[in-house]
Amino acid sequence: MTTTVDNTAPTMTYKDSAAPISARVSDLLSRMTLAEKFGQMTQIEKNSISEDIISELGIGSILSGGGGNPSPNTPENWRAMVQAFQKAAAESRLGIPLLYGSDAVHGHNNVHSATIFPHNIGLGATNDTALLEEIGRATALETAATSVRWNFAPAVSIARDIRWGRSYESYGQDPDLVAKLGAAYLKGAQGESLQDNTTVVGSVKHFVGDGGTTWGTTGRYEWISDWWKSDGERWMIDQGDCLDDEETLRNVHLVPYIAALEAGARNIMVSYNSWDGIRMHGQKYMLTDVLKGELGFSGFLVTDWLGINQLAADFYDAVVMGINAGIDMVMVPFQHTLFIKTMTEAVVNGDIPVSRVDDAVSRILHIKFELGLFDRDYMDTPSLDYIGCAEHRELAGRAVQQSAVLLKNDDALPISAEGKTILVAGAGADDIGMQCGGWTIEWQGKTGPITAGQTLLSGLVAQLPKSARMTYAADGVFDGDTKADLGIVVVSELPYAEGEGDKSDLSFSADEVALIERVRAHCEKLIVVLYSGRPRLVTDQLDQMDALVAAWLPGSQAGALASVLLGEVPFTGTLSFAWPRTMDQVPYAADHDFLWPIGFGLT
Ligand code: BGC
Ligand code: BGC
Image 1 (cartoon, rainbow, N blue to C red):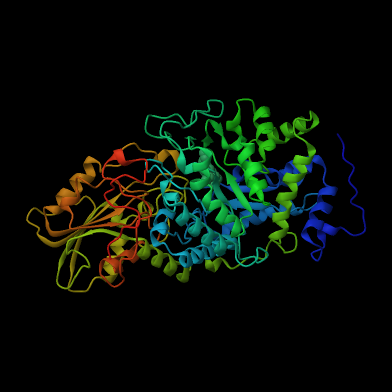
Image 2: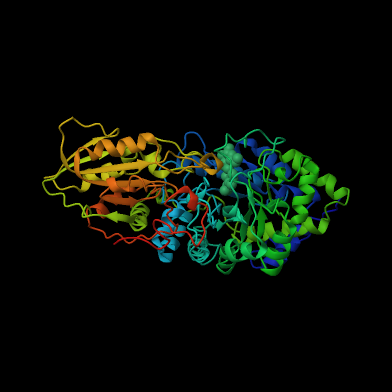
């Protein structure tokens, strides 16, 4: 199996920026060996690769997964890391540039001191397409400043079951809302033209039905690791089986993809979930017939992390099934040697046609040309000063304010603070990591001062009038005879991501109930601010609260909430998720008598 390649031709069309992209793609393809084609189809996790392998094998892509950070984690080191890989790619035989990808799912969130926007569930509550476009743009700028031109966002998941640990990655439960916000974000991220080096190509994910899975159906893949082993709580619904019929799949979960395609989607990530028992990574009908055929998607499909491995215990069978189903690039993420060897065998054996390989590689190369990667010096990037800049933090603050949903208010808000005594409680009131949630610095997120930002407590300190007296105790323990005008309790989930956040019961814990009761005993009016990646059950505690604000996972600029509590900025957020009274109302069904329906929000 040798391919003869003639690189001595006097004009190399692929290097000619004036030539049409399709001509450049076919010219380049004609110069590539099969091995180089397999290299382009390979995406490796950044810690699993050395620079010489990139040039030797002509690797197509590298990613930073959740927490895939350089050490120390600074914007400068991020850029230097990506550019060192890019330099190695430039030294490969054909000099095909790399596409470097990362999950900038709420800002360029792996990077220390980047602006962290509210998670998608909060952005859903803003119902504001112009805002989403601005956030897509700002995130792209911060991402591109580190030389990363591919963002694994937006997630256009429609979370039907809020026990799912990824509910917060979903803009909402209404397909049309998710469609319009996802498309707006993508437009902002991709700009007028991908040739502009301040843009990134988005990855619309996870195709398709990720939010429609059934509790208890998470796949078990002993041959990969025992990682997804569940304790009856974690990994119970994430990566599970979507049992919807085709009509429902199309009318619900497919809707945002159609909008994303109209908005210029060039990359889509395949989902871990199964559809009717077969994993999406092997669903040729959905990937090739529907998405690439019927819907005319001409970009490329990337797998999820180890996604192809889940198709079969035998890696050869898994690769054959996945690539023939329509996968173009494989997030291996570690086994590049095995993947390339397997591809070689499968093509020699005739189990994967060369035409499928050529199609996959053409799609990948096409996007690289669209991004202008061949025509611009990889050192040429937007300024690192964009990262965490004042303008982006102001935008994030606005998003925080617009995402807050006022669920109950018996004359407690806005706070008239002049001369008042105020007690503040709850660790979340002063913890950057808790307000940011998962996918922040680390994959699972982390409590504590993990990055730069402003907490609600510091926002209040900055904004309360001098005549107000505020006391903070994280545990809500105040002197016995303290009697304050007002108590503010922040009830906050601890950070989590993916199946680690699957949870069967979303009621308040005994500790959370006790925290509310302790503060209640010391104040006239009690305001509860909830930080969570999904609605929590508040039915039994609601009587104790004079006001309740759902603030979701606000990100680095939670201090901006203070202006809303003080009435300087109005409440405008509305629920994009239905709020259940009991766990019996989960998963979502249109006919439930919810505590608060989609669209609810006091002003
Ligand atoms: C997640 C994706 C993510 C990928 C890379 C996977 O576990 O499901 O959403 O883009 O990892 O970090
Ligand atoms: C990575 C994530 C990835 C996850 C999937 C983690 O180790 O950091 O990016 O999504 O594994 O299993």
